[in-house]
View 1 (cartoon, rainbow, N blue to C red):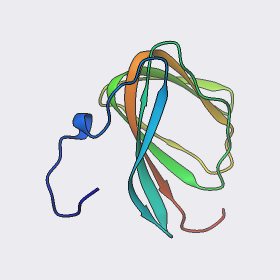
View 2: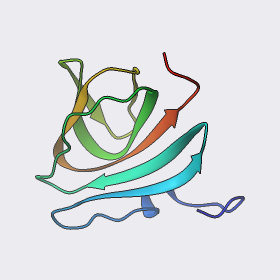
View 3: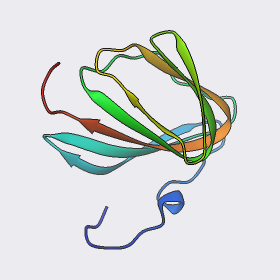
View 4: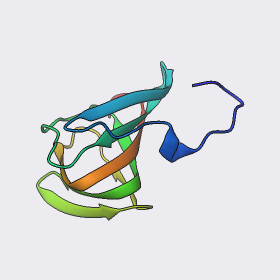
Length: 107
């Protein structure tokens, strides 16, 4: 992504039929920001990160399971996935979200 250039968040990434699309907005040694689009019926496997991750839903709605606790997020909602917490996403239709990972150190 080009720095110091205005952008429309929803237009950074498009939906692709039957696919999950991930695009890096900014990548640094201290962390990264990515945007993801997920089509209806697609999902993501469970994962665990050694870093906190800030999740912002920018379009649609999603079910996010963090340490076996279900969180229902809609457009405009956000949540922090704590470091070392198993999590997975169950989409409820198409959605887009921004993930910000802070690599301030292992916790």
